[in-house]
Image (cartoon, rainbow, N blue to C red; front, side, top):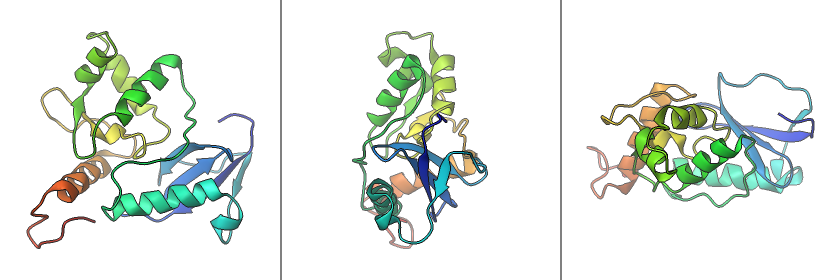
Length: 178
């Protein structure tokens, strides 16, 4: 995290609390419970977020809509910090459609370097804005559910959630999403 002051908001979600961080102009981080610790230069929001940071309020609204199955594409200004390679990978992650997956090798080929699957995996793991930059949609070449900073159980939940929300049948009990 840079020395600029960030404003943070912790919201509830079906996969546990999420900590959102904003520099006031863009969303910079989304961390899942167990991934964050108190940081210097971070102002925690108390009370109504709308009075403190409109961007965090909008990010929270969009995440709630995503978890409710009503939002498939996020529309937020993002400012992830990373290397040029990581930024290129994260841009490609945003192009993976809701409910779809891509392998690490596929992402590497889209970057023009079929041998960079391992480097794509490292960049994927360093993604500071999961869910919104959907690193959970990247799987092993054999279709296996591999690595996720928030844990494999959360990755499975996110993939199953998206599959339920695009399925015309919903789950066995008729619920389409959530």
